[in-house]
Amino acid sequence: VRDAGRAETMPLETRGLDQARGVIPGRILEYRAARRLADRLGLVAPPQQLANIRRLAVGTRRETELGGDEPFALRQIDAAVADLEFGGATLAQLAGSIDHDHALDRIELRDAGRVYVECGVSCAKLAKFCNKQGLAGGDFFAGIPGTVGGALAMNAGAFGGETWRVVASVVMIDRKGQLVERGADEFEVGYRQVDGPQREWFVAAEFVFAPRAADEPSNIRELLRRRNETQPIGQPSCGSVFKNPPGDHAARLIEAAGLKGHRLGSARVSDKHANFIISAADTTANDVESLIAFVREQVRARFGVELETEVRIVGERA
Image (cartoon, rainbow, N blue to C red):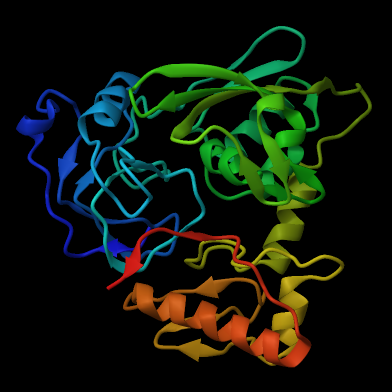
């Protein structure tokens, strides 16, 4: 979500939210789990209780850059942070950004290898939970940064696994604050893309995993080792910036264009993995977005390939 530096603070008392715990008007947040870029929003609500989210969905319905009368942007996207005016409300799903007590973080084993997971649970926690419960097929989640909500929204994947291959059903919240349960077959899913009912956001999902054979070891340690060797772990980024084009890899194209380490402002292409953009303490959102545009232009000019962003950018540039 781009930086809403001039977003108007919405008075809580006029939105019926004065009793909603954890709603913060006009607070500047630094999302360390994303790019460490300041996100100045009109209204920020850590999703500490589902009841608060439902009141927020009903109470903040207004025109926004998200298209029409969207009530809020649920931070389930691999978000690009940039400078803009943003008139909606954001529910922060990034681990560690705010007090996350009861932040939709429930995870529990149900029958027949089914695991119920709320969207605030980190993907790494889901991978470890499956391993502890003797379930196979969930190790790849250890390689996905962020939360289950984000993984559901974009069909995140790693090491050959993809989120929606193991989804049985989901719980959504609509703009009226109503919860709706939907089957996986109600969504059209592709590579880093999920199309479903409009104006609904993920709250939870039920995944299905097979039992792990007694002699089948967990791959989590090996996957994390490979990730640490090949990706700039520990440096502020939003993960992979571009989708891989058919039959190729975005990182290979960017490196072949000579762009590893290229810098605009204080944003730079990672020297370790060319599909990552690294920010510094003084990086602006415009730095990042300008670098994304430059990389796309260079790859198009050199190879005739149009890179499509995996990150989603919400709002208009200031």
